[in-house]
Image 1 (spheres, rainbow, N blue to C red):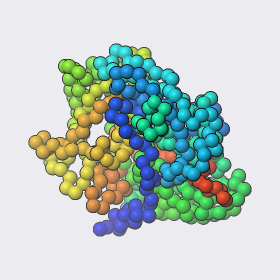
Image 2 (image 1 turned 180 degrees about the vertical axis):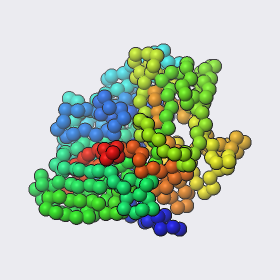
Image 3 (image 1 turned 30 degrees about the horizontal axis):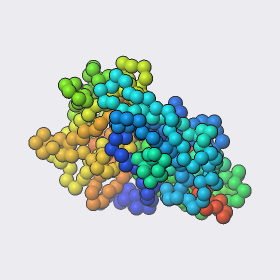
Length: 423
């Protein structure tokens, strides 16, 4: 094992997983295209300020053929996504349960569905404390009949967060990885000790592979710095691949075949290949996000149709990766490394395949190859996409602060930075 690989392995071992509990569960197979994002910004993580006027938009499609009585509630949780032992009335104003009253019945689309949508905060429900939250959607006013859950964040900006993307100090990875350098301004905190701070950095929306650091490199008065040569290092990866499904009648550049005979349209995407040996070139991408849109109708939310989309990845020489699993990654699979994103090898064709039911829109995605015995997230893109220091990546930074006597850590600082800011 070379020095760079040892370094990356040690970094992985020292970095905790962001969530020990899964706050994003889908428990009803009739529910599709669950979206939680700031209003008007569908590509962003679900983050709102504690005292800001902005709201989150929550929407989803239900394939049931009749209207359903859906309710929602929110729950304050700690930094491990575990419930905080306080009454909901201590962290919300309004009602503990609220009915979803806004819905539309699909039109034009072959696949019938009900489209439900609402905003938070609203007059019936408003979080009053900063921290991690879980949104719960359930049926018929029965909190035990949950159909899905999703995380969101409420920020009280007491800590100034200043970050930049740098080349790693280690020459072995300086042209393939990116390092986040951070400085925190804590002068607004009435009392501060280093062990009260935890910093979480997320590359694009890869929540499961977020990096967590609790020990700063330096403290200078009200300034806290994180710039160790092992802190917050991420694989550069490559610009995301893309797929345009805004029309199911006309083939876009990445679509090989459209089959519209009977039932839902079947879309066969042109085969993907490894980009590891290809030269890097820049273009604007969505960093794994997607946008629901339609080039042929006015109301994308409830006029867009669904399609069965076949993704194909051809490994070198048509030979499967031994001891590794290949995953289709992006918001279309919630960036989760599980059966919902795992590609299956077709020995007859010598390719990996994955079929997904997707709503019309514009999608971006990548492929991750992970060792089953010794998973090293720093190598996720090495064989499939290639790693380049120049790649445009977005980083989200959360700073958790546990005040003296507090029962949970609040989010006291937040920022987003982009690797292109340094160019």
